[in-house]
Length: 247
Image (cartoon, rainbow, N blue to C red; front, side, top):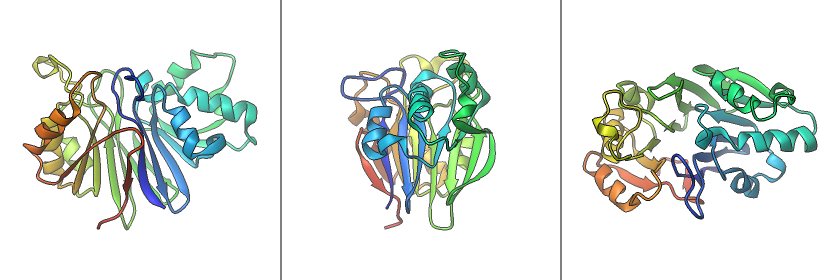
């Protein structure tokens, strides 16, 4: 099985029936999750009973990207077999989650690898690249000899976005479209049209829009992205499964 399953697609906070950022990547039995925001853990457990994963990657410390990691921590702390789970994240993630339960050591459950940086993770070469946001934040590139998947959960416009998604088979890009953000002097979020622009510069084959601001019209976001991207545009909806192939 080689696929990506959308666990959550909202930015900031979940809408009814939805969850915040989260994606399950499966490749020939290897299971990796990208971000675990609000309400993603129950969805993850429907695919991975008992939290059986091979790796977790968290892009930054904002709760809509990492809060359900603490639930996974408790599951493995009290119900696991003692095997540590590799966790790739920015340092702020540990600081943020440690504040929830200071007496519990996250390192007793997770084998920590700091991002940004490059790591071998199962069948993938993982590269974490710093991107502009309110806190230290990475875009993630997963690559092997058959597929390239790139993901940015949060970011302002930056030339590194073209390199992050270079020749990717699937580029998952935030399309927050938060009102007033394009007028800010320091940009920390993208519009859907900008997501399409960077996917085009990257030469991506497929673009998936995610991290929608609650209440936004997702079809309108897809229409905006198609103004700047000629390839296939997908909307990240909870439960959507996208095969990782080049057909």
